[in-house]
Length: 631
Image (cartoon, rainbow, N blue to C red; front, side):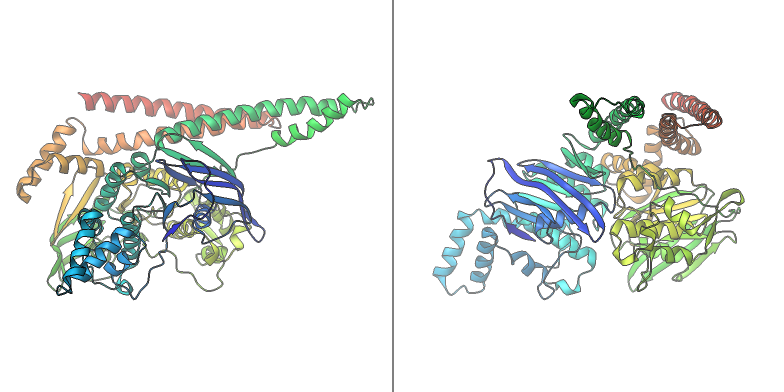
């Protein structure tokens, strides 16, 4: 979607100003009095929890929606492209017609030239079209837009939009936005529906192109490498961070610590002023009346509390036997397209495999084979008797008409079993997945995309699987939920297969990769995605047999002393220490509660000491592994 701003100009470099916008739906207030601005050359990521109104704000910026209060002011004449989650494309046009269905002057020149080529007898028209191609430097532009379409796997320019998949439509809309070279590009989850190769290309494109960006994305490597500023909507307040994602994380932690100190000061002052108020001063002087007025402001500050509830993932994993999953000489083809060719693999306990490869190389076929959705052409797939799959698919949750959130979970029972023989009610479980009692009685179709994914994740985990298959689990989940999911998966003792384009997610949780090369070739790479990219970038192009030898040598050179299990332990232990440090901070904050009984203080002290001792143990082991790694 491309549009031109018609509002008054504010300043030379100020592209857009958002002034005090608010939005509510019925009794639910998404945000109030939100203000920020976008300036030339900024590359801004907009970060907020699911359900807080990120996409709504983008829709207000694009004119698709209206704010209840406030206004959005664009620089006069500004050219803006907007990429939404659900692109609005004309189904009757072809890919090429969609590109040329634009107000872009250079595209019109190229289109006129193509028309002139089809009518060579009109020499005068052809000469003018040719001259215009020179005048507007349209030759290079035509090459550029065809390269963009090629990189986004949209080579068949005559294909109708109506025949494209959802992912292809999103990529076409992205291509359209890039080709039009806007002053300001607004993007809603631009990396969704892109494979890893496309994402890395898009990163480089944004790095070299002089373009102003404002986007929502959960892709943390993309955030880190593309954005130079983060705007966060946190509990209804906008915070700006002039740096990339790492800078944002550091400064946010510092801000929350400062807020905790200020809150503690406010509580102490409130206690002092409350004591003064209880003495009920009789002399109502101007000074005392002012102090009484101030008391109520102090009281409000002292009772502020961060709503930092975190998703709690806990399951009662079924016991996993010695025989898990075996594939013996498994082959599968569709017509002349080979997906698997005599593939062999025996899964071991604790396998953590990432699956990567271009579209059409057999990734989905592989998942369908091992879950018995389709049958192999030849070979055997043997599934252990104790294996219980938990399959998180791209299709997401199946929404029934008029179904409420609580109804989805109650289909699995009013009470759900947890570890050590405990159980939890459906309502309590949903609260652990950040659905409060009021939200539990909302209709599922009213949930945001991220909330639906979180609910779907809940339904997969409560079935207590011991072999998790996650097909693009990170789409639409906010970064907070992603961090919790990653930490849960690091501690998950069962088997795990992940298909994802989220490189950060994959780097954190997988130990090795199945690389689908196409035509039935599947490499088993001993490392995570960043290891694989480093290997691919450094290794010369050789035969498959030579590649296997090089791959083993590369891994040996890059990790000389740690065994496979020690590599896993080192990866897991770093994340576990971070998680324990977070638990320690949360526990220490509880001591600020002045109403704590002596018994509760002793209980918390014991728990805190246990966490401190565990951190020390983990750090000692971490040092041992590092020393061994460095030889």
